[in-house]
Structures are given as structure tokens and as C-alpha cells.
Length: 373
Ligand code: MRU
Image 1 (spheres, rainbow, N blue to C red):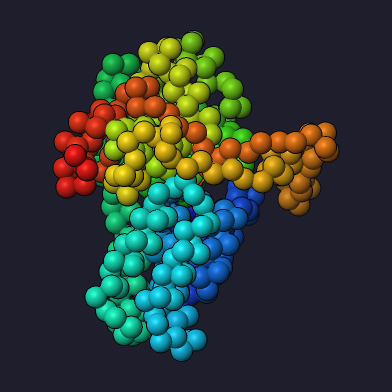
Image 2 (cartoon, rainbow, N blue to C red):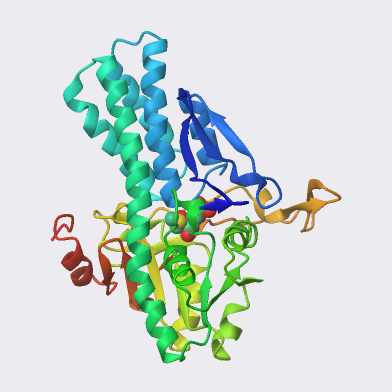
């Protein structure tokens, strides 16, 4: 997508230095646009854990490239047991963040791809590079398809409103920054905007890391999409007053029965939407389904992060990024990263293969090749 008129993805190979991966370091946005070089698997692990890159899609793509860097390291260190080394590096990457299933999906895809290659290091380097590139490119294409399918929902609402502005509420950042390009939840919005429909986005600030206020607002602004940042607790009020036509969020892991893990606070938005009869949609690629989980609330692992993220808040003052303490110094804080919205609260899933009900049956109809039953 465009940044100051120049087109970017969130992750790519450094031009003329294919042993270096470049990412947009999202910690600095919206105040600074910083590109980071990643040259080792440890650097990739830190980038994922410390959220230089965040969002299910780009976490998966980073893990894919992390495995390629691991293969380069195996060669540099003269490892003989290359498969074993890559398994260990995969395990290291797997531990970085527990909720987004794209992480383990990408690592498993790499490990499967190299299995037939024994310890042939050159073949493994070539393969892991190809697979990493394929994961990233596929994410771009899958998100584009989500945009085309989700566009129809926005178009219908626009027609119902006789061309008046469609108000969309979103939570966190399921935009192109959370993917490789286009985004999941934002892709239908960008498509509608490009095609001339009038849209306006209510952007939940998304405490504690403020991915909405910092990232979604920034990327929508860069593309010229009208939007308003709101504190997290405003959505219910807006819904009661007819100011939200549809909610679209992303997903970090969705059970094959349609329960959705997404950024903490998503569940409360779904409850408010249900109470106000407002369509609540989740946009996701097939790589965000967990085909081994039937009960999302009980089975999806929920990341807990450091209390400092709740207790301190970051912002720009006089051109410097500063961090200030928000709470009494000694008050403990709890920092659950995600929650699970049960399928019964979800109107539908906007996937790369079309829109379906958030039910095992609906998902199976679109993905008979993956569904476990
Ligand atoms: O903690 P984050 O910022 O990685 O959480 C991101 C989200 O919850 C997104 O909504 C989700 O990953 C979908 S983006 C493809």
C-alpha cells in the first residue's frame, strides 16, 4: 500500500542483499517510518515477540523468512544435521507469540517442504527462500480476494443507504500492516474506497498497545480513507444511535467451528453488535483457521503480555517519543492480549474463498479440503 505516495509491503528481501530481510518496524508508527534489517533467526524472533512486526499475516510471513535465515545460518555455522537445526530454530520462533496460528502454520509449512531434502544445505536454502516468498505473496493475494468478497457486503449497505456513507467499526489493526499487503478487515474497505463508495471507519484505539489509534488510523489516512479514532468503550454507544452499519475485524486464530480469537476487546464489540442488530463480520485467510480446535473459548491459547504495556503509555512530545506512567506505580495490571468471540455472535466470515456463516458447516462448505469432519 502507499506510504507518502510510495508503494510498500510489510516484509521483503533487501534489494541486492538476499540474505537480509527488511520489515517496517511498527513500534515507531505513526510518528516515524522506520525500516529494519533482519539478518538472523534470533532477530526475527525478537521482532515478532517485541512486536516490531505484529498481526497474524505478517507474523506468519516473518516466521517463513525466519526459517530461510535459519537455513543460511546452518550453512554459515557448518551444521551437518540441518533438519535438526531448522526444527530447533522453528521451535524458537514458535515460542514468540502463542495466539496467532499463522506463526506455527508458516513454520510447519517450511519444515514439511524441506523434509524430502535430507541435509542438502543448498537445496534447503533454495527451498526455504521459495516457500517464504510464496507465503508472503499468497498472503497478498488472499487478502485481495477477501477485499473482493467483502466489498459486496459494503456495496449492499451502500445501496440500502442510497449511496450515503457506510460506517464501519474496526478493532485493533487488521490492516495491511498486520498482513503483507491489503489487510484482512481493511481489504473490503480499501476496495470500496477505490471503487468510489462512501465509507467512514470508526477506529477503536485498542488499549493497551493502541494498534487502532497508531496503526489503523495511520494506514487509513495514508490511503485517504475517512476515519475517526474512538476510545475503546465508545462503540456500544455509537451502535445504539445508528452510527455503525457493520463491524469488521480480523482474526488471529479461528476454530473450525467459527469461534474467533482476535485482539482483546473484540468479544465486547460482538456483544454490543448483537444487542443492536448490527452485522458483525470477521475477515480472515485460510491460514488463520485452526483445524484442530473445535471450542475456541476453551482451547485457543491466549497470550498474556507484560504489565508495563498497561501501566505506561507512549506518545510524541516536542518531536521525541516519550513514555509516561499512567497508573499508581505499585498497582498490578493484567494484560491479556486476545479474547475469543463465540461463533454464535458472528454474522459471517469474510474469507479468501467467499463469505460464509461462522459455523462448522459453513466453513466446511468453503474449505472441504481442510475441514476435519
Ligand atoms: O497483538 P497484535 O497486534 O499482533 O494483534 C493483531 C490482531 O489482533 C489482528 O486483528 C489480527 O492479527 C488480524 S491481522 C491479520
